[in-house]
Image (cartoon, rainbow, N blue to C red):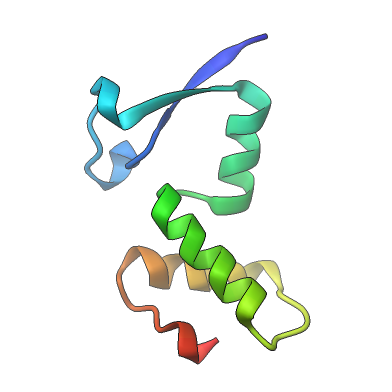
Length: 82
């Protein structure tokens, strides 16, 4: 099984290539992570999950989720808004 390196804090957001910032995933799990969570860190992904599952919103469009991701990444998220 092909393994890939996943940065806990993405390089594009200042993460380093050091061992304490890297985990190895099977390629299909790594691809799924980025498909679902984009460039979120594990802690940010938890916030996204909390927002989606605690929200009263019944249907999330991809652009809605993308907007929430950007707000999480930039620290402009308030879970009460969703």
